[in-house]
Image 1 (tube, rainbow, N blue to C red):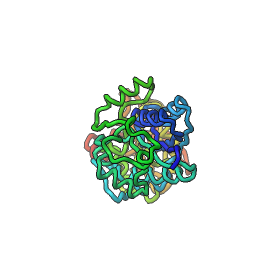
Image 2 (cartoon, rainbow, N blue to C red):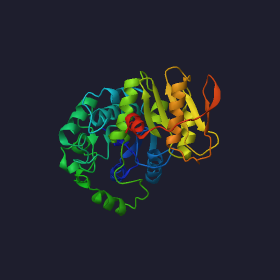
Image 3 (cartoon, rainbow, N blue to C red):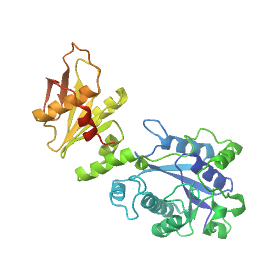
Image 4 (spheres, helix red, strand yellow):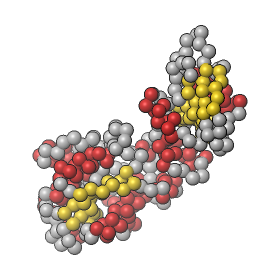
Length: 339
């Protein structure tokens, strides 16, 4: 066993402090950042968690590599072996998936063990003793996952047993509070971590409804489909048609850019949201669906009494315009809204 480790580094408080504790012991650390559209640890629109992980790696003068969770990760979300949490969050299966990827990278780079910012008792599904040990077994990393923040509360790992890491310099944190991590971060003058706890969209029940709906109605999901799920208001118009309504100017722009196989509808002579209508016939809307999409736009628009609402639409098949005649009722909104 050598003094080289792979660190799972989100850029949040816990993983940043964990890495610092190991770097301080003279261990050669390579940070591994997993990119996913489900990350909520940062409010930025593009890089998100990655930008904070890169900044921390630069501060500690260590190498960092970013990996995107591939489409096989969506299969894990759809059919998790160990089930979901309170929403559509397969936390145990997710950790197994992540650690298996990290193990492969560990072997490729000649590292000996993995470190992570996990804290005993912090997460209800994946950060209790039994799930932690289950995850280690399933990922083929028994004794090789070092959790510096809670190490003294857990059995010694191989790098501790072999004297690669000094166990006495590790911590015994448990529970959901971040007070101790914040104190350690202050002691090491670590600043600008995005937030204390991070987060994952898969734990959000409203997002879970969108994700489940997508699994139920679309055979092969891609990352562009998932990105669309993260923005706007989503409505299931019927078994083959879904509409996404922008909530602000930025979402309107992003929804229009993502809409490739459906129809993009935009207000022509009034202020209102962009709507993307996704359906199986690749951009062909009949009159009933056109009326319904127009009614949906009017529901979230401000229109003067004397305005005649004209709506433009475009798809790969054709472009055109129509006059919207009605507003979607509250009952219809409640029935169709995936929330």
